[in-house]
Amino acid sequence: MKRRTLRRVAIAASAMVVAATLLTGCVAIPTSSGVVEGGSIAEEDAPASVLLPQGPEAGAEPLGILQGFLRAGTGPQSDYSVAREFLTDEFRDRWNPRAGTTVAQQGAESFIDVGERVIEYRVVPQATVDAWGRYTESESTGPQLMQFTFERVRGEWRISDAPDGTVLTASAFPLIFKPYTLQFFDPTFRFLVPDERWFPSTALSSLSRRIAEALLEGPSEWLAAAVVTEFPNGTRLGPDGVRIESNRAIVDLSAEATEADADRLQRMHQQLQASLADVTSVTSVALSVNQTEVVLPEMNGQQAVAEPEVDPRSVVLTEDGFGYLQQGELAPLPGLSEQVTQLRPDAISFSSALGLAAVRTPAGVYAVQSGGSRLIDERPELVAPALDSLGFVWSAQARDPSSLVAIGSDGVQHPLASPLPARGVLRGMEVARDDTRMLFLFEIDGRSRLLTGAIVRDGGVPIAIGALRPIVTSETSIVSATWSDQVHIATLDRAEADYRVTLHTVGGMSEPLGRIPGGTSIVGGNGPDGLRVLGPEGVVYQGRGTGWQSTSVTALVLAHRR
Image (tube, rainbow, N blue to C red):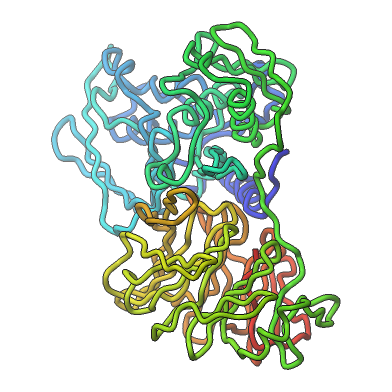
């Protein structure tokens, strides 16, 4: 099933704006090209729309050749055939455009002659995309320098040496590249775990091939310790690669795939089907091994869940008690509401499946179930606790990140090894619904840092946090953060008296979700529409389009829920 999120709608809308701008020639290098709709392309599996940049002009000087070459980075079709026209015959086959892409800040480029046949191109990177589609925002504000060397070929200037990869301005990038989510499994095979990648819009078979190759290559390094893939070691694409026939992607695998048993074959198929779900017109996936199609056995057991959901009702603590917020009324939780209310907590994480609430009080963190409440962590200065679906309560001291522990249902504290920053203040944390990733909100030297890390487990018991992946470093204060869904984290941001909500993609870009009068916390639901903010005077706000609307309900605490 194809995922349709606010993020993808926003990207499509911004791409349309950029396309219109490209036609007027108003965008700086390298965003000037013409737009051709998909119906004009003869290939059966052509993308919906592509840019067709122009080749070199006769008599152009080196600077004009370089500018044309950079513009041609907007045309990935036929392996950047137009861009290769700007290169010498000898260099043409050596240049590798798939090595990566630099996403440059708009209007920050410059060209400097450093020799008779050499031009230095300077850009300020906003982000980079590597050969496997991994998008990383740049933490440096310094320029990146690239040198281009020129030679005359049959009387015309051509580029004889250049860095591999392409450069796109930030406004052009979402028009040329689109996000695709590779899917791996959590160790229990209950959940699919996303790994966001970005690939250029090319013919559907070429695009599907790149996605399949990236899936077979494996998860991003930061995520690898928390997930598994079902493809046998050494499995690569077979001779046929990926073919598109009648909206069906046929993925040909190498002989190593024959090592998989029936259950493993089904999971391999699920990984590919889910990873190719966002490719336009691909509605089903088939497997073949060395060009022989595989007949898949019947599914033994349930498929892994790609989008774990929570009860859409908010869970709140009010002056009247603790429970679900249902049509403006409080619906108590039998066995829990009275106990939680008596503790008067200032932070709550709640699992309906486990019938468990982890709450913070001045005395420490309590685990509350229908059978009673237990004080499980009485250390000072604790951050709001987090829960996972295996019943572990996560707790840490704000000024000592090394104090992170996972507390089991037996009350045993399991200290976790982690690369969390030794200095700074931990402001918040939350476990993703697939139990493989944790988000951390830090304040370091007056700047807010949002990070994610893989949860490493041994027999289900958390033992470590893997390498951290930066999501954003903000000059404004991030008041609160929460998982919005599997690939998005929402933040409540404050700049003096101005409060806003922002949606961040893990492995992608950020987008604004509008201003809000104020707030102390934000909690996730089922996507952006399910976000709730505890605003001024305890008023609960919910998103409406690009703005925020009061629910007219007041609460003391807005609980994180699983």
